[in-house]
Structures are given as structure tokens and as C-alpha cells.
View (cartoon, helix red, strand yellow):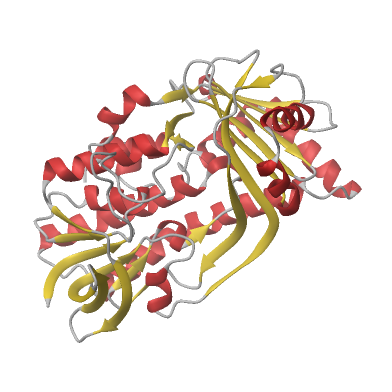
Length: 409
């Protein structure tokens, strides 16, 4: 049975980031991914590293800087310096600016494939992590001093062991299920149609989020005039949008978004993602922790999902580097318990924020209409409120991990 100090299940952005972050521990690290790296293609395996636009907060930028990926990624990133938030059928808007906090940018937009390539490039250069792919997780067994992992690989069964197992394999996490961790949540009855478009009158370095009765429409600058689009509708309507001819799709987008940016053109390939809130009943236990979407899958309001997962990485990496320096076992209960305790507040706040926005903006009862108008007015008109909103959305509240503060591990 091949033995590792830490096995990470899931080679998406969160799992690969953790693998990068554990460089320098002196431990043997393994990264298990279900899909293969394409021959002669991008460095990153899997279908999660596609052409979607991802909004990375300032704390996420610092985390990626600390693990060595940002210098490679920066030339392919587009800064967001302004955010314009509006509601369909209502006057007024909330305008956020990097100048409100004295930052050069509120966030950066990167294409998922570029992020994957940067992370896997770091792993290849460092050589500290074994990439185990394609491999399907079949089962997990708790042994006295480690975790046994059974994989299906190349038509045969492979047995591995680790002192610590990290579940980072997404919303439908096989690792989480094998560990017997229950989930709770709800179906939003919405789906996100994701693509890219070009507006006739783009606003440089500006992201837009427009709330409609069916769900938000988000536009993220991707360089030049190109914008990533997240178009949330009730699920049946989203499926219809997916199947519309390009011209009809663009016409529907213009009608729902408004003509603030003029007509839209040049739609990219469309994909659809059903939206659910999924939270794990616990994020740590004997010799295992759960991170990223495997721990919390969120509504895309405010683009918090990946950023929350990268803060999971930052906290766990900080704890594990300290353990490595002290010669401690990475899977001991004091470390996994500390991870759960340190992540509890951030998880709760972020879940409540994204789910609360979904409940607040997709209900037209008069008290809620008044409440959200007051909230948007306050966020726009009161500088202290605006600054606190920006810091909260950027992951800079509560006990901020060292990497998110720009400090080394």
C-alpha cells in the first residue's frame, strides 16, 4: 500500500491550490483527479478548467501570490476597479470602487483554464506532488493511524494510505460521501447560463450585477471589450435560453439587462449549471477535512464560491505548515478540529450572505422591497457601510489567514 502524508481528492482550482500551498512541508503529497490531463493540451486535467470567467477577490489574489501562481496568472487577469449593482424595475444603484478602500482593484477576472494552467504549472515545476489521474475514488477506510483509500485506475484497483485525507472534489463529492458526511441545503429552482459576450458600449474595468425577479445577471470584464456572462433564470427558462439561436439569446439578454451597455453581440459557447445550496454537516473529522464546494456550494450572488474555497486552502495550509515545522502528524485531531473551528465563522457569514441575497432579491413582498431599497441606498450613500461591504465581500473580516493578508506561510 503506497503511503502519503496528505492525499487531496479533487484536482480543481481548490484542490490544486492546496497542493501548491503544501510545497515546502517536506511531506509526500498526492493529488487524485478523476479525469485525465489531455495530451498536448492545457496543463490542467479535468473539465473544471474551461473558459468560464472567475472573479478573484483581493484576498484570493494574495493567496495565489503566496503559493506562486499569481505571477504567471497576472498577465492574463483583468482588474475590476468598479462594480455597478442595480435592480430591474427600480431606480437607483449601488456603485463600488477600488478607490473606496484605497486598493488598485476590487478583484480580478481570470479564465478558469488560465487558473488551472498556472496551478498545474507550479506543481510540475516544484515536483513535490504526485498527480494521480485519471483515478476514480472507490472507497475510504479508517485505519488506526491513517486513512486507507481505494481507487479504480487503469482497469485495476489501487490502494493508497494517507495520514490526512482532504476532500476537495466539488458539490457531488465522492470523498465526502465515502466519509459518511451528510449534507443539507435546498434547490433554488434556478440555473445559470454561462458564456461570454461583447457589449456595444463597454465600461472599462467595470463589473455589473443586475438583480431581476428570476435571478441575477452578472457581467465580468475579461479584457478588451469581452465580458463573461452569468445569466440566472428559473431552471425551465434557463434551459430555453441555452437552446435559443444566438440572435434571440442576445435579444433576451438585452431586454433583461437593460440597454445601459447597448446591444450585445458575439456570444460564446453556452453552458448551464443548476443552482443549489449544499453545506456539509461537518468539515472535519478523524484524519480528514472537507474544503471548497465539497464543504459549501453557494448561490453565485456576489461571486463568493471559489473565493471561500481559497480561504479554506489558506487556513488549512497555515495549520499544516505549522504542523510540519513542529514534526506533528498532519491528521491528528487537534489540527483537523482547529481547521473546523477557524472556518466556522467565515462559512456561516458567507453562506448567510449569498443565501440571504437570494431570499431578499427574488421576493416582491412590500416589506422586502423596502428593505432591499434601503440596503442598496445605504451601501451607495454611506462610505463606512460601503467600505465594510467591500471588505466583507473580499474575505477580509474575522480571523484572516496569513496568505490572505499577504504574509508567507
